Length: 190
Image (tube, rainbow, N blue to C red):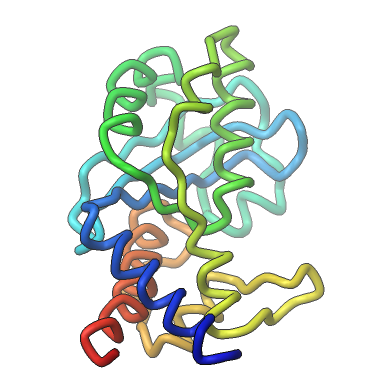
C-alpha cells in the first residue's frame, strides 16, 4: 500500500473515532433475501454497550447461521419483534454516524427485517454509514476471494484479541471498535 493511502486510511479511522460514531452489528437467520435479525447491538468506539437486543424473527433460522452464532429460534420465544424495538433503535441509529463491519450486508438485513413486518425503510437512506471492513481491507489487505477481509482476520492483523464469543453482536461491535481504534491510534504518529 502506498504511504498516501496508508495516511488517508489512518486519518479516516481517526475521524470516525473523534466524531463519536456508534458501532453496529447484527446476527441473522441466514444470508438469503428473507434473512432477518436475531440479535442487534450498538456500542460506542470505546466498546461501551449502548443498545443490545435479541429479536424474534418471522422466519426460521438456517442451521448454518445457528451453528455460527448459537442462537436457536427457541431462545427467542419471549424476545420482541422488530416493530417493538424499531422506534428506539431508529432514533439511536439516526443520532450519530455508524461504523459497521460489512455495512452493505447489515443494512440489507435491517431493511429485510423491517420489510418483513411491513415497516418503512426510507429512514435507512438518511444514515451516515462507514464500512470498517472496507477500511480494514485497504489497510491490512484483502484476505479472501471477494477482495475483503473478515473481522477475525482484521482483528488478528491489528493485534486485537476478541474478548468473548465471536459472532455475538456485542462482541463483534467491540472487536470492530478495537480494530478501528488500532488504526486511528496511528494518527498521532503521523
